[in-house]
Length: 302
Image (tube, rainbow, N blue to C red):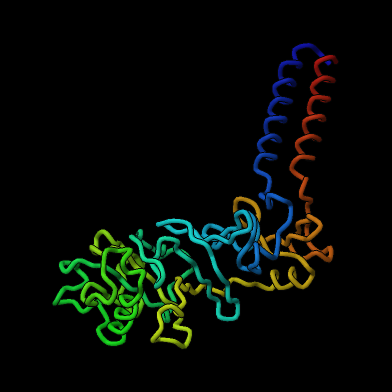
């Protein structure tokens, strides 16, 4: 080989190494621990949810994750604990630690549900605004925002609780500072409860009276959310039938079947479909790096 060719060959080798370094950096994303789990604490985790990044459906991974054995739901106003998931009814129940209950009332933060998320507030959810100013916009005489029927009974029930002293009211105080939204359609844009704007001290949410509408100590407090359950596909069903977990991979978040042994495939865990191992990225980088340096060493000394 003639000497003038060496610089050009050296540049080509560097470009070759640079290309493969970029390719390895863009390798498909995989769950942190190489596989997925079907539980988070005491909660069963099924598709479309996942315990780790790359598990479940990508539309839900932005809002739900398993953190230190606790299933969490994230929205614009904070991170909330998921207390239960009901798969037959496609609902989850979340708990706001600053939300008032009969036994404990306190100044609350606001709550907002992102409209772009695959969640909606269930129709059986009742939001109650507590300790509102008499000049609050919820009491606008020209706009009927508060339920004055069964909502009045809910307000009287909440104000009969000893915990009402936590928001500066006496027990059995007049319910004129309380407002009940019977339906999510009564909430402002984006399903938002902006307490400072509404001039209210606190809020609570009741998703079930537990058959005891007259005893607020037995009411079930929390926010019940409905999720879109139309994400399952034939590929996902085949994956689950083979003992795998449905997940996603790559920048395009394409479907991946994540097997219990750490193998990821594009179909199922029976061996059909293109597959790669959970350590593929590291092996690829090592192999290309060693090969590249071998070529570089050889060419430099030809």
